[in-house]
View 1 (cartoon, helix red, strand yellow):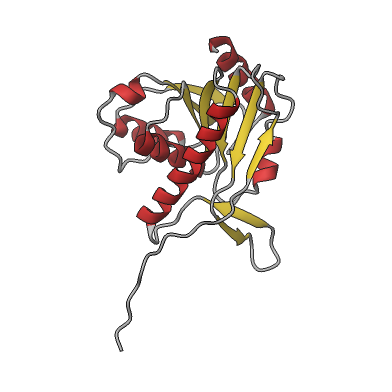
View 2 (view 1 turned 180 degrees about the horizontal axis):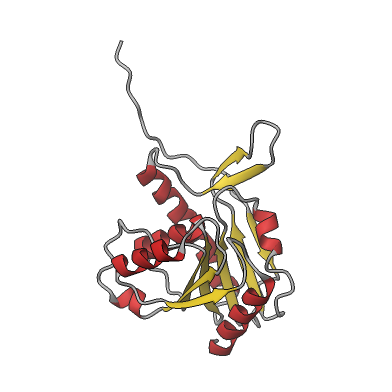
Length: 215
């Protein structure tokens, strides 16, 4: 008997963790995507203590698994190499849903997109696919994917582009990451902070202050 594979669309429930409340007075919204194997609520806690006029929306990746075996902590991922095109389409639709929620809740706020580690490639794929009207993109300890044709350049060229790197990053060597940025020919403003493959409170505060000043 023949074995066949079908691909069917379905709906599912996804989690969105918010830091702060969307209000008409909100000046800055950050849509922040976590990295591989992270728990979204722990990731959101990194943004605690933001000014009241800032709201951080942290969507969870659509694929969950146990970290370190069946008794490990449930964590999430954005995609794997299996059925990658379908997974990219699914998370682009999910992030667009989050964007629509943000825009409706605070229509005058500036919107910045933030990706940590695996989340960096995730947000770049979403921006490339859907072209949402955002003001800035921040890649933190991550690089843009090389398999995207970043053309026409007008869309990304109009965004404020920032990249943050820990001076002791144990997962992503800066020399290799720098080559990736050169390959995709997108000029990012690179910032280095003291630390590894992590989110540091002081560097995050500086970033949010800079984004608020531009809001």
